[in-house]
Image (cartoon, rainbow, N blue to C red; front, side, top):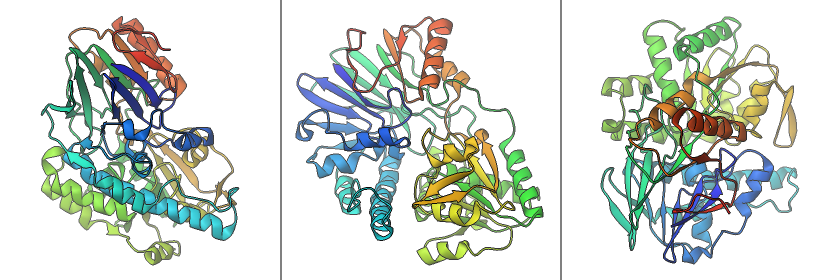
Length: 457
């Protein structure tokens, strides 16, 4: 096999790995580049090969940096299967339609208010493009090996992280490649621990948190402190959140805090139709996560689901203490932007920023302490209290990644550290080399490697 790194190489976004085997092609993950503009521009790069020469796509999980490029390939002629777990397929249906709709809305908003440098501003893809892509989804079971092209088979195992997330084992001509996807945490309150893998000839391992450990602080304690002090000053807590995984974890913790009377019984709003639909999937796929039926029902009862645009607009008129959870997690788009414009200038309010904020995103700028961020062509002052919160991450930290790697009974011939910012990837590379003694490197965008030789071209 030959492998080309078409994303998440030297950066934490745009996960795409192209395999070539006897003239046939399989793509592992199909993610959007997000964050810095120079990365987002890659979303409009010509694909590495003619799209009609691509035979199959395999998704590790549903997050847009792993699935969000799919409508672009389909619009450009891809008609092959897209394999993923059943839960991932259901989540992708929600995420891609929302992504296409948001891109159309943002292009329309930019054209209406004239703040785009392009005339007219065009979406990367539309909701209709996303609908066409969804027709190609083919759910497959964990631990069930299937041949996706002649002589090349895949097997999926649970990766924790979010509902449906999987590692991918590829076998061709006696060579085994394992792609970690995004690894979850061993003690995640929602998801089960990633399954241990004992052998691979070649390994792709993510490094989102490859240079740090998650704090030992209890997330409920930090959330309670922020909520209580903000409520005392009659402010509102705004939480930018991913719709998948993060929103449900926040709902769970808020439900638990209210049950223990650790916070006041203030209203909790989930302002994301997508997150609302995702929450229902956690009830449908209950065997795939740790939450009990009572937990699922309780956290839904304690949350007011905001669906319509008018309801979302009305939330900006909220004058009494409340928690508003709104997509997106890094404040790159969606309804949270309108809430930021309304709430961030007020020092009575708080911005609770959970999890990793990729470089170049508004979330990263806010956490870095900038005095203002640009939203819809306007500079919005950040006077609200900003509270970064790393304890809610659904990614394994550096120690947890190393712990997972120690499950291999023998060292892979070579390990490629991917899906991390440059420092995170390089720190993890050094740890793998020094602590495990493995052959390891950090590939760059569009590097090609022969799986049978270890040198990047």
